[in-house]
Image: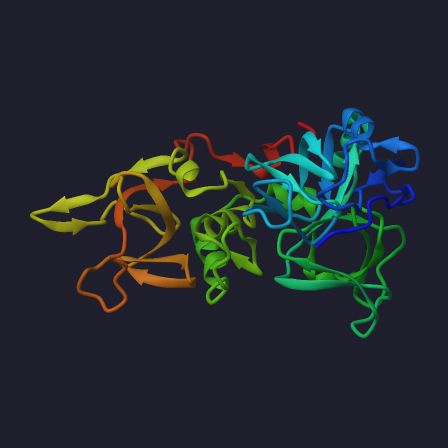
Length: 347
């Protein structure tokens, strides 16, 4: 897929933030660094002045290289703030809150200066607590769509009052519309809630049957670490992106054998299980979430439940369990609450 070499988009003014943001450039991967970014502003100047970016789409692909054919490494949800590290052609190099560094394509980012970023973080916002949804032009389920939403999207509060059970909203890139009140929570109040293992497991169980997607991090599709990260994020906990990174945080929980039989007595629901396979028997390549009774939920082909018991019909024996980590509690090192992250709040 490619775009014409030069496309100029107008500046988008968001009265909610009382600031002007630049929409992302719509040029292809062959664009040169000095091509027009917006009006008479070059990409180079825009990126040098605006060192932050907010995702304006329900979810945006983050690729390992600055081209459409490159491997998908991660996804950013709407309203997620990232640091701008640089550019190549029309592609922006971004660090997401995970933290994960990858390239985001020519559409879907709103670039911000430090002051605009601070204004965005202070602005009143909702978090979408439904599973799948949409923004409607008018307060009606039969109205034309403005855009889609997935669980965890963050959206600005619009002006005006609720109408017919719908709340007015504004996307980070300036589109306005309505979302059912029942599918939104005040973001600042949502951040104050304390997570529980039961709720995190319940969130993971809601993903049953969601297809496996390498680099996937939304309810549309997840890889193994994307599933565990998303289940925790939707409960206010920010985990690292990849399984090998997740295995380095939290509290170590012993798993081993007693009299040659597996011992999982120390595990609790919500603990993460890490598996290794291949040439290096200790290299973590897969992660799942313990749900109790010697069983765990994970994304492998699709989100499904497997057993740790070799005698069970759904035993997961393709990789070896090498460690377990608990992500909740005062002793869980390196685990960050969303409310404490600079990417989500002015601390």
